[in-house]
Length: 447
Image (cartoon, rainbow, N blue to C red; front, top):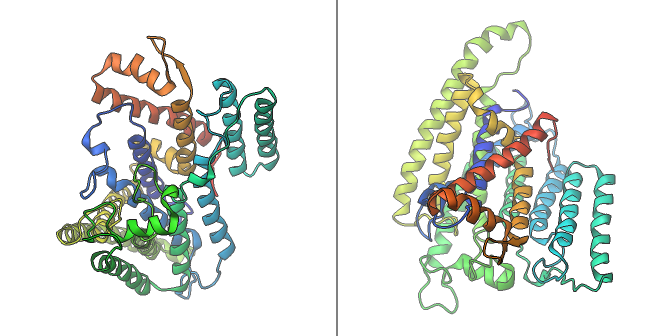
């Protein structure tokens, strides 16, 4: 098949764009589809992360290839590449919160100097991802010299507090799920992979509903603290290393990663299915097959994805009555329903782009999709920067750049809820421009 599946790039681009959109509201309130469910429940925002894990899974068979004899991945076992990529993604997730290696607000140096150091570190990370180690080293050294200069100038530089560093997060979960799903792909066939996914979902349901939590009179997933996943996060990770807004649970915690692996395996199964629909081009004798049988296989593939998508959505809603949708706990019903929705969305992209050839509308999402990692990492760092850097507001009080923009521009034009949406859309458009600059220069950030 083609080295790149355009519909997958588009689906990835749509997903990462939606992720950036909901992560960067201008103010509150926001429209309900752009918010996560409070606890149990499901909103369009809750679809985004499982969609991304599904996409990671689809890419695994396509990138690792398969053995013509039928044993996928048996011909070559690229363990080093898989492990290196997983570790790199995990460390990248940690770097977003660790940079610039000092506490911005607690350090009393001028904001412009602190921001300069932060920018140098971020630029060093960018060139490191491009494997330009020389430039990355120079920029990192300049950033370190900036910190030294602050200390020598008499400013108090408060180091980053690793004792409160969150260990798991979005990229960290992606790394773990990618590693597990890749290794499973290399050593199993599709029936075994399906069996593993089902076992993970049923096993997670069983332990979450039956194992009592120490210190709780009643064990229930309706309580943010008194459920097994939250308890294990507190015991194993420690309360200082879980999501600070969750306090008693981590939405990317240890136990809930198991059903997230099932989400990724659902993508693996879809990716392998796509491979079966593609026929190797072996000369003139294949021409008729490519023009008839191949088209039939593609249509059958899309029809199958729609069929299973609808049925999984229905099954997920039924299961919701017994094991409610919950993104923070990544419940089994949540996996099933979001996998169904992912199949429907991906099938739509596949039919429009790879079968019907309607590609012009999808250009912005291709730009996002081929550099999804760079968009997530550096838009996240940028959002932290403009939330940390202070300027004077119209009343003379210091406010963040982000709040200054919202107060002086968006709230002047729109009602608060629309101002929040307008800011988020402009944030996305700004990053579309930056990603387009990379795209037109054929610069693609990968690990």
